Length: 428
Ligand SMILES: *Cc1c(COP(=O)(O)O)cnc(C)c1O
Image (cartoon, rainbow, N blue to C red):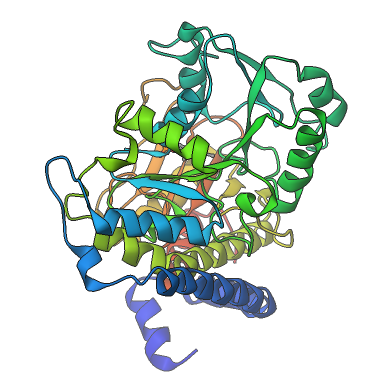
């Protein structure tokens, strides 16, 4: 490390012991990081090829208003997404207001009363419980006569294929597969594993629509679920594929027929994809997608660095420091309230926005326990930006993700260790 950088860390109040402990760990990760860089390089070229193929041009950055008819920027952006994901069609819109909304549209557009949705990978993401009606909720699919079945993963985290086979019936219309563990303790599924599951399902009943919740997974591997048979793939633009620049939005990619159903649900039957003004956001969507592979690689480096640092400090981490990665989320079990708050304080203090505030636990509506969150983001709630949160209760696990640059993620993690060090909660 050069003297300027050493001085910079000193100016940022990082103890020499903390710094040398952390940089020692970074030293050991060079090979891992080189592999990540190669995945990022591949995905950069994949995105670039899609932009070249679809002749992205300055004119596509103009905005549209009102109905948004003939918005060539919007239409070209959707063609680029379809190229990146190797699908027939794409819907990429600012009025898909979040990942949950995009998933809600994809589900409700492709089932009808009397149909059944099956999750073969256990309980879906919290917010989808309301959408499906697992938890009673106004406007849920349950209210429209759509039923839901679930097959839990086995104790070892593997898919229960016998259970899945037994759960499929003549009413099973759509299977929803969540790639990322989200905020659970199950393993994240690799794209390869998703492919095996989809083939298994299609073998039993070929007309089942296989939908993948791709949140947090985009560009982590060189293939996406649509490369292994997913009919629909859905995600949020304020996570991986927005590259930190998209200020809002969601995407749905997949088979023409199913994406068209989504467009007719999002706007109105008969209008579909033809309407929806882009309101000047096209440039941010294109540029964010262009940067996304590099941003995701930076976030992954941060996650792997955090896993190795905290593992060495004696805290349980998931995934562990050596495991392959299939999403950008890192769980660290901090084992005490003090350590959890110190960790989040360190992340918050290292943020470019709201660095001066100290995260406090609060009783968030809809949660059983108090929750603490550290996020100093340019885009509200963006979790491709450096952020950490978790319920302030046993075992005091914090979920950590993001970082628009590796250097920021690295400093955030070092600063979190510094906070624990200052309180005598760790020795370096
Ligand atoms: C974030 C996330 C969602 C929901 O996205 P929001 O934008 O927060 O509504 C759904 N599924 C998974 C796996 C996620 O990580």
